[in-house]
Image (cartoon, rainbow, N blue to C red; front, side, top):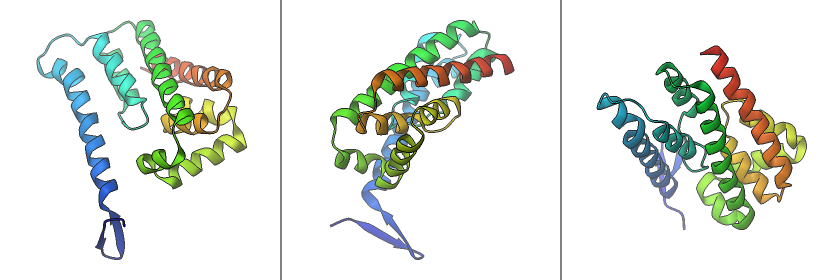
Length: 180
């Protein structure tokens, strides 16, 4: 039996709401302990704190604005090529973890975390467009971790998944570097 709260003809799933609040709190804590601490202590930002935020932002259960963090670090004067390498490397490691979680865990467990509808939409996109979907979701500030998870659940070929993820990330971060 699911716990629901009725509010103006909308049902709110209490366990799901608790999970969202918990994950948001985790994301805020990670950001605060890395970038936030560096900013408020007026110390120089570190590439390690950027790597932690970027890595965390690409995990499927945390949603952090990794593109904004990249721009912030570029504006802070860090070498853009090092930031590109860190961004792409940490994103690929996180997305590989997402892929492996999707590959090895059942759909029922994952549905509890991201919801059947979001997963089904990602699965439909991958089945229909495949490589283009993986590339586009990594190029644009979309939820590429969900696509990674869905690709793993579909047992999509890992070499294509990694190739098109890297290509999309490279184009995205190179464009951000050129613009900012």
